[in-house]
Amino acid sequence: MRMLVRLLCFGAMVALLLLNVYVELKPGMVVGIGAKIVFACAFTGLWSLVCFSRPGGGGAARRRGYYLALFAYYIWMLLNLLFFDAAFGRTAGTGGLNRVPFLTIRNYLRAYKLGNISLKWVLVNLAGNLAAFAPMGFFLPALYPKQRHFFVFVPTVTVMVALVEIFQYLTRTGSCDIDDLILNTAGAFIIWIVCLLPPFRTWIRRITAAKGE
Image 1 (cartoon, rainbow, N blue to C red):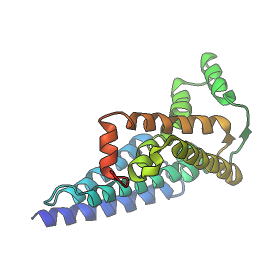
Image 2: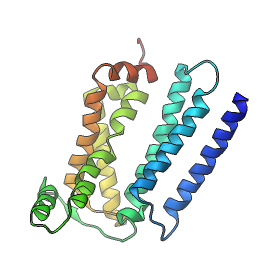
Image 3: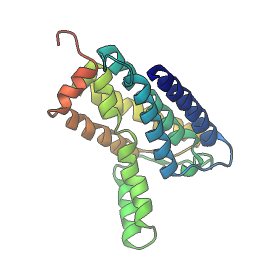
Image 4: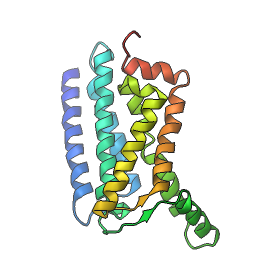
């Protein structure tokens, strides 16, 4: 019976992933933030049932495989958000370049103060940039022990974000903005700091133990 439940959950998860990819990439289809959250929660729930509904609990290998799959799903959602997502104007062929730190942030705050844009768009653009790479602050140190060191993690995330900004500019799926680099990296770093604190540090180390632990 338990095996049947796991098989049904796995089948439902695969169907959900196919539907998720289809609706996200279908031309003219716009998937809102609420729907994205529903997809992510449904995937996480089904994958949890597949991994942990069998006897034996969660061994080290199973735990790492579980989080690797979640990391892969996050990467898919992030790449879609950054390069293909019509809900964020990625098909509009827009571009731009800002090399002045905090210029874009000041412009958003000034426009909101003058009543030219709503608070929603300020949050989408500023808090959204903080949140976009924030999961990296969990997944990288959890899955790759070397990423638990400041001088490894920060350069890794900075290079990741810089490459994204360059590719967005070259493909005209977004602007190349130093403020995006600052906010994306800051969001990941904040979560990384949180993961150093107990009991989060113990949880992180249980997912993928470093040599000697």
